[in-house]
Image (cartoon, rainbow, N blue to C red; front, side, top):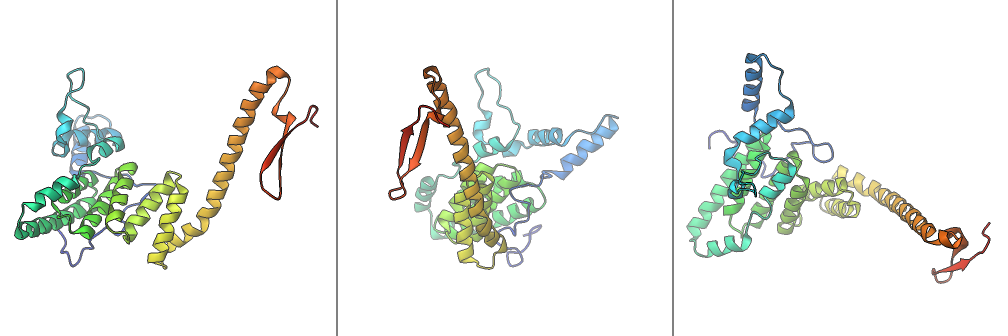
Length: 294
């Protein structure tokens, strides 16, 4: 297979070849188009376009990446914007694999046809891997998706890796919610998939879902006790969770106090007139009224 590494020399999944959340690296989606932009700008004696402008130009030229729904018209009869941002990536590939439909289709296929589909999905995976490594994450997402459309559902580990790799590409496109969904799908298919667990843990931590992140990090430590990053996270997250919870509790009590004072003010009272005392034996609270609080 010309242009792609042999399966023997290429891992089934990425060795985290990107700076994952937090601090995702900016992706050079298509170097050839960027080079053309620079050349055109110089020839026209105008200033170079910003990265955002170049990316917008690139996405306008990525006609082959559009899904059928992208051609629908809006209420004004105009075509929807083709600008691709993180939310758009999520919409493009949300619930894109109908497993039930795929399973029904497989029932009509011979074992030879299923094997051919498996081999083709493997080839597509390697192609997408190479695209991802060269910075073409958006094109890689499309090809991983196409591979998932044909990879037989009985090959759960292979499908899990496709979801896991697609999640890595989506992270590079800053489509974190969609990437998290892909990680979850991968883990459902392969519960011991360490890289998917690590990716989901980082995404959850980035979204302040610290308890979920801690659970995934702990699972990684069970599977790979030598995983240093997971061990460090398991050590630091409990304290962060406690600090966050205390901060949230303080903020909530402050808001409740402000609300209470607003309702009590017309009666010449405030929350200072009400003191809460905890019963050490039961842990329950009682409220005592004080006419003249100190």
